[in-house]
Image 1 (cartoon, rainbow, N blue to C red):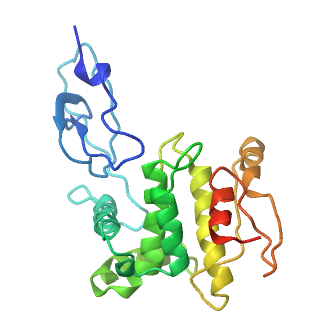
Image 2: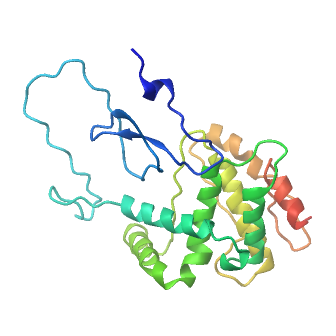
Length: 253
């Protein structure tokens, strides 16, 4: 018997914003319906249905507490709402046609144009890779200039304060195989180039700490380690299929 979900699971191009998705029911099972919009960020764990179900009392759902007593049986703390709100803001910002409306530095604007529109000779960045960097850029350069974004920044600042005082952290979650190393290279390029142009800015850095969970991953991350000092004393140059072209765009030796 044909199953449309398994026969044709991929609905979108990896180079464009997702516009369709397969609907899942409350148990994470496909309903065989295609919805004409992007899937909202949710914590979904699909579990195969057992072939036979015994009649028994329904198992009580476990409450995942964050260690602060925020979640209870009656109300569970939901971090996905802020994720969807940030995503909507980034979508609206990305759609602005005029570069002067982007509220970013000229160097950042040129990087965004390069990543979004450059005709790469080889592998081009996936949409999820560009979106991850866009989110970091929006939170760092754009949101602080908008009163409407203050609530989001306050929420993130309070969450950081509770979890890890005096160290602001953002997490960018990508699927396995989506190219997180390339995203790291893009972030380093964005930070480094702006730090060179604005040495007194507190928003950009020339130093980067890359933490790897093991020797195998450490070896794979050596593409971020190729060093070539330039006239400004910067000791980081990103050399990979994106990095070479980025540095050529900015003519950084």
